[in-house]
Amino acid sequence: MPGRDGGLIVTREVPPFPALEAGIPVRQVTTKYGGHRHWEFDTLAYARDEVGTWLYMPTGSHMVRPGRDIRTVVDSITVIPHTDPYVATFHAVEDDPTGRLRWRLYVDMTTPAVWEAADLVTMLDLDLDVILTVDGRVETLDANELAEHALTYGYPDDLVALAEQSARDVADAVVRAREPFGDLGWARLHEAQAAFAH
View 1 (spheres, rainbow, N blue to C red):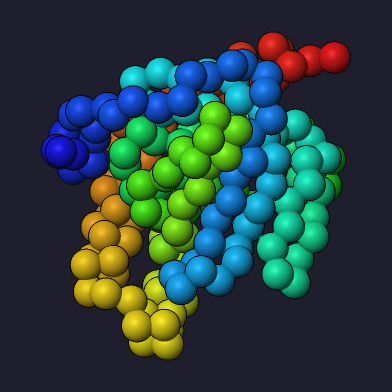
View 2 (view 1 turned 90 degrees about the vertical axis):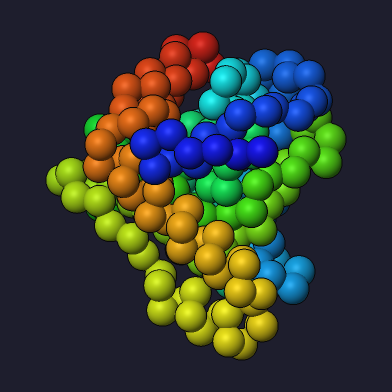
């Protein structure tokens, strides 16, 4: 069962996960409630530790969702927690050639991820996001979207509560620089950049 440590939901018991082979492609598929498609993209497996599984995306990675088709402008690394209800992506904003990227860290509130196979991980996006901006502000985004979708799609009350509590916990952890939002995420990003450098 997940417990609490300083306000952030942390894993107490880790169920078995597929063995991780560093460098293999891993498809990350996110849907909305009711099975509506959301973001899908390929990553490279980097590491697995007590926090979760770390997936690397080099600059130029292809991301798609209905109505959007983009290429990333900087390297990034995403941690998929073992059981916690979020997905956090750390961006190498110092390498942004456009200077337009607004955030260093983007955390999506989700249901706990499910590893369908060693190369496929899925989760349900719960609308709320927590970001750390390039100038150091912590913001929670899309509360209106959560309220609208909860009404339109009939979210169960416990799903709304999960999203809201997770966003509060993550925002507090980012403000206080609790791991993996302190040094760990950025260290993993720089390690992966070095490991996958051509």
